[in-house]
Every structure is written in C-alpha cells, then in structure tokens.
Amino acid sequence: MYSKFRNEIAAGGAVDDPNAIKNNSATTFVTLFVVVGLLAWLGVKNPWSLVFVAGLIVSVFLHELGHFVTARRTGMKVTQFYMGFGPRVWSTRRGEVEFGVRALPIGAFVRIVGMNNLDDCDPADESRAYRQQSYPKRILVITAGSIMHMIIAAVLFIGVYATAGRFGDTNELLVYGAPAASSPAEQIGLQAGDQILAINSTEITSRPELIQAIIANKPGDSVTVVFKRDDQTFSERTNLISNPVNSKVAFLGVSTDSYQYVRQSIFGAARYGLYDVVTSVRASVGGVFVVVNPVNIFSNVTADDPDLMTRPTTVVGASQIGGEIGRSEGLKGVLILLAGVNVFVGVFNMLPLLPFDGGHAAIATYERFRSRRGRVYRADVGKMVPVATTVVALLVMLLFAGLYLDITSPIG
Image 1: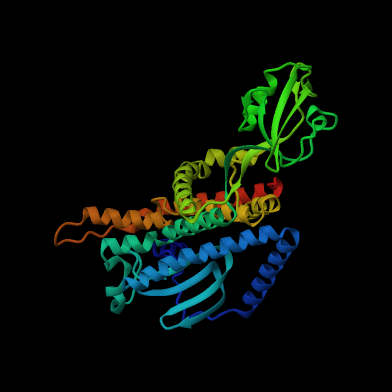
Image 2: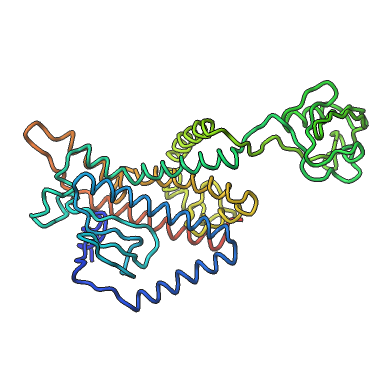
C-alpha cells in the first residue's frame, strides 16, 4: 500500500494498469445513487448551493483540461483523465487515453507518463515522458491548471462586471428600506431609493459622512435634510431625536448605503477584472499560510465560535456560503464567490511541495539550475516522499477538521 501511495504521489495520479482492472458495476451504482441523491437534496435545500457546486465541478474539470491540452500539444503522453479519486465508477478509452470518473469527488487528475525518476514507463514512451521535455514545456504543463483557474476567475469577474456590475462605492448615498417609525426621517417623508445630498450645508456622499453630520448635533437640534427623488431635489427641516441605543446621541432614523452594483463598460470590466484577480492572488498567498497552519486548525476546532475568516472548510461549507450569497445577491454574487475560490485554489495548488503541482514545478526548476551544459541533472524524488507524506497527512487533517466544523458549526 505504501509503495502504491509513494508511486502515486510521485506520478501525480493513479498508477494502476487500466487494462488489468475493469469497471465495477456495484461501485458504479452505489456512487451514482449517492452523488445524484446528494445533488438532488442540495438543489431542494438551496438551489444556489447547487449552482455553486456545479461551478466548482466545472472549474476542476477545466483545471485538468489545462494540463491535458498543454501536455498533448507539447508532445507528452497522457494515459488517463479522471474526475475524482479512488475506485473507478466509469471509464472509457479513446485512443491511448482512458477517460473516466472515480468514486471520491475530492479532485481530479491527468496522468502523464514519466513524471520523475520514480515514475517508471515503457522505454518506447521515454521520449514522450514529462521528465524528458525541456524546462519551458514542463513548467507550462504543470502550471497550466493554476493558470486555468486565473483565466476562469478573470472571465467571471469581467462577465459579471460587464453585465450585472461591480460592487463598490458610488458616492451616492441611497435610502434603503422604510425609515424607523416616528423618526425624523419618517416625518419628512424619506423613502427607499431617495438619495441624501446634504445635512444643512454639509454635502453627503457616504454613510460615515451622514453619521458624522448627524452626531455633530444634539437631540432636539433642527437640521435641514436635502435629498433627491426622481430627479427632483427636496429640502426638508426636522428636529433630531435621541438615539434609542444612546439617549445623548442624535438620531435621524434612516438606513442608507452608498455601495451598489455599477455596470461597467467592457473595457472598464476588463480593467477591474484583471485588477481584482491580482489583488485576490495577493490576499490568497497570505490566506494559504493561515489555512494550513496546524495551530489555526486546532484553535478553530476547539473554539466555541470558530473564526469565519480563518476556519478550515470543505465544499460543504463553501456551498453553504454560496447558498447564502445566492439568496441575497443572486447569480452575480455566486459567480463572484466562485471567481475568488478559483484564485485561491490556483494559488494553493502552486505550493512548492509534492503532491501539489507547485511541487512538480519546484523539482523541474531545481533540476534546471543543477543541470550543466552537456549534463542533465535528475532529482531523486524518493528523498522528497517523506515530506510529501507529511503534506498529505496535513491535508487529511485539514479535510476532516473542515468537515467537522461545516457540520457542527454550519456557515450561515
């Protein structure tokens, strides 16, 4: 078992002989029943969660498609393209490639022959092995998955910004909801959708400015509220009352917000979309080290109220977040969340450790620096297997900790 584990870590996928193992009908039926049942339950409970999960599945498929296409285009031999890990559920062969689905929906893999010195392959295929290719080709193929995640994120950001808009400060403070009962705001007739322009002579463009303009007065003071409705400007005078929470603070009694979705031109959407990919990458780099920190995992598991910003989570928790955002924001909110998840997964996958793609990229880079003219250096990946085993153990701990928190402390 350890030998198989070691070989699969080194190869980046299953190493069993596709000709020696046939599809198991019982495994196929049970897996199909469980997966379809879970998806149906998810769709009934919250359709937006199902939309988010479907987006994740498509993202994982496109990640592997990036590896598959670049490997084939650069002359490498690809033997397997699987969604999932573990026992086969279904498979079919097209040419030299076996396509299929496996029982555990925790990822996917594309099998390229000859990844390193531990990955034996047919001598006839050695010229098409990954390890025999030039450094630029190897880097292109191994980073293609993460590059695909960045492309997905950019497309989602740009598409949402150009159609539904980008959420941001509009510098226009709008009233939302009905004013508080018997409040000064209700007395002067403020309505949802009105834009507050000024308090006395102070121009207002954001909620903090409105709050400062109100609390600069005392309860009982008279103020002039200037607001716009349907292109008409109104100016109404009213007396402020005491805040229900603190009687010494003045109170107008209206809910406002200057942040809205603003539709962008295609050029503006592209500019903002690429900018948000870059800023998300920067945030994800720091987030990766928080997520994999064992101290952070332990503190969240033992906490009465896990920290929503640092707690580990799984697709269960992510779908909960997607469902809640879908309820409040609709499809645009789910797609923006999906874009952010793609960026994080792309960054996470490039950690320079096996079994991540970043580990294979680090090995290729190390070999490139150690190679000299006329002599090609090959790293002994066997020495890296203990570290890779530790990484896998950490990932398993992260998975179970996240699943535990998602069940015992559901998000939303």
